Length: 449
RNA sequence: GCCCCCAUGGUGUAGUGGCCUAUCAUCCGAGCCUGUCGAGCUCGGGACACGGAUUCAAAUUCCGUUGGGGGCGCCA
Image (cartoon, rainbow, N blue to C red):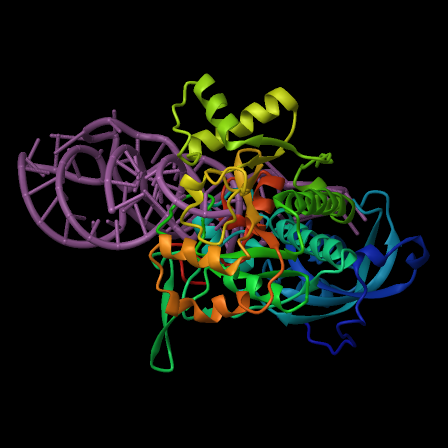
């Protein structure tokens, strides 16, 4: 039934909705898109054509061209067409104008029924949405998350570029993990055992011995943790940063707070349409971020009736409580929890302990409204001390020869951090399940699509 | 790994032993309609996750399986 024609088009030849202004009124344009809905009133029909930047009304009149009218209105929802027509001003149309079609070409007719409605008036479970992700992402409020994500990454890169960092990529197929082996995905590598990298930790530290001085990496990290929560996925995007010649963990925290402030500001400015669509009003975080020590957290939690030993890390309830307290008492979303005890961070063999009090490390977390967004601190760059701490953890030094070598021949002081990109977006947009911030999430039970 | 909960058309749901040849909406199909924009109207279509048990009778109760959701632990 479709009307086949040959229209001139190409990735730069088509007009986009946002390019149409009053100067185009009366002229002819070609646009491509998905038929979201057809309202056929008999003699006149309104086709809602959804493109990258909005929904256009294509208005067809039966008396103008009955053949075109019939073929255009008989297309199924979500079929893809390129349409050519005249732009006509019309105050009754939502955009203030509409297109009167002169011809169109069907690029693809959609099968029916749809596995997931795009313009339907009913919701869908996340599981159904993820099973049909290509359809799900046709919804503006869902693909907006990824436009915000793109802006966030652009903001992050902009900050690091300004501060003379270089972007690097370390291997994701590795022989040993940074911390323990239980959370690694084993793979076969030309007949020997290998793993998917859970963190670029060892590599980014080795790069501190090269003279790059400031590096960052944005790359996937793989964790085989059997974590089944709304803030864990098996494959996530990690921002990893390492800086040489730092004096203490304070330098790292300075970098983080500037990064967060600038990135939030960048997103606010460059994704304002998407933020509006999602109903998000982003605040502007002020620096310096408030700092509380781990010991102070223990006291606050005691006040709140949550028992926690000074040698224990915060649990989920504790994290959330601290987030609430910081919001209530200080009206802030971002805060550093500092001075993690060696008793907690002892397993982190590369963490530097405080010279004045070895029972404490300079390690810290950045909390974001109750969620752990960043972990970081100053690393141990002194070869002998590092070896001691590895021995304490019963690590087989020969397995780490490639890493230790970088500390033998000139290694500056350094420190850094890791930030979960998805968690950043999740909290920024108030999304309840982290899976929504990933196009095709991987978790304990999902490997397809 | 542990604990709790859920599974009904393509999608989202109502239904806690017989009134269920299963509700409503959305959707799909056929038709009417020249200003719709959550279009409207008429007619039609489509489902009790799987296996077993209890019972005169099971969507409904019990057991198992599979799938899903949430919490904890751990972490980003």
